Length: 301
Image 1 (tube, rainbow, N blue to C red):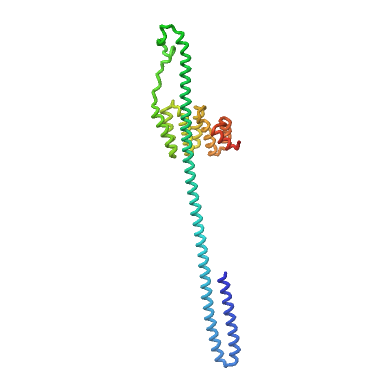
Image 2 (image 1 turned 180 degrees about the vertical axis):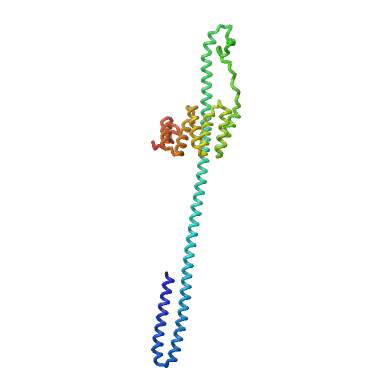
């Protein structure tokens, strides 16, 4: 705008000067002859033409400068947008990295909790076995005391027609290698911890078939459902966790399985079913960690 204003001022000034000169020349021409007047007029016209060309050149220069400033301003705006885009991209990458780290920490926390629960379950199973053995010994003591002296320690006769009529004669179950059992279970956990969820599902399914009598089967079934949830197979996750709850309702993993079902239902958009499941978790397992989380999601204090 300043360049245009300067141009207009220059043009006005030059026009004024030319008109003044023309007027003075016209008055002066009256004092000389026509030939001298014509010369003065031609000279004035030449000066006016030169001045016009100078003005046109100056205007062109000012317009070029204005265009250059516009281009520079546009370039600066583009550079500013590029810098903002780079900043936003950096923030997105940072958030993605933080999300991945958070998910890894959660998986590690799950695995650590699973290890603690397995130790607790093993202790409970061992205590139950000791209690059962003590009860069996206590029940057998009166029977032994009532037997005649000659028959104490003798093997009771077995019915030849029905071997199970007088005593259980079924074959003992095949011995299970506890080291191999633990190794197979840990392999599934390692897949889950590393984010290889499909491999985790396969490993835990093989574990459940191979070690069907293991006390770790409920936990393995839970990790199957959790791995399916991680792969966004929410319907498969719900089915796997419902199988756990149906077969092992007293498992320590039952509350977490029910909470995982609520999460899968929410992901599927069935918010009403998710709310009902959360209410079930809060009512059945109020003191558990899953129950506390369910209350938080429901807004219950």
